[in-house]
Length: 178
Image (cartoon, rainbow, N blue to C red; front, side, top):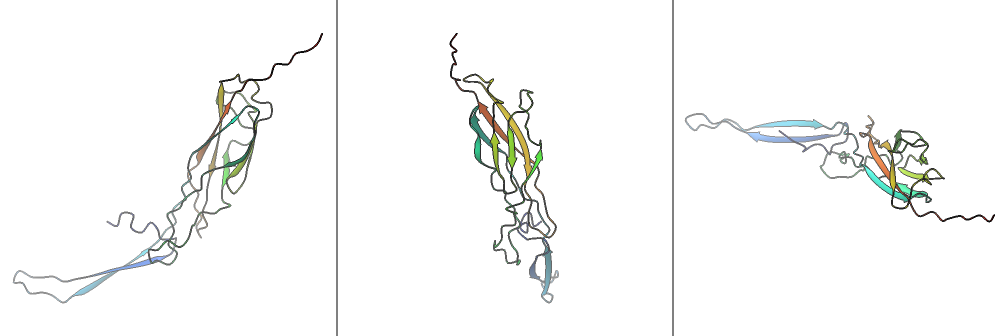
């Protein structure tokens, strides 16, 4: 059982494994030595994306959001067992759901505006959507994304979730003259 010994092979890349053997009969006579050669060919493994959390205040936009870098075990492009490639597509990130505007976990609609880019960066604009939050209150919004790889048979990660917590803050009191 090779377990995960060959998971590093890129799709179509071969690694040759061989061993020699002989048999011995009940009288101790040894047979000729023979060699078994096995060619293992890699298949594409999907990249692995990760969940992510971010936070902001009700009146502060997130201008530099970034999902964690995806990983991919397919790192050997020549079959020698030495990692020599990062197969994750740096521009292969995609928004799965929902599209902007986002929904809050409290059921409110139109909870901020998301701009998600194919490099995994994002901006989240709060606008006035969270002005109802009091100091010490919070709500969350979520969105799902995937990562893909550069394989000849492209793989896509399982969708992962980004959770953004929006924290309420003390709003200044406005007074009007009569």
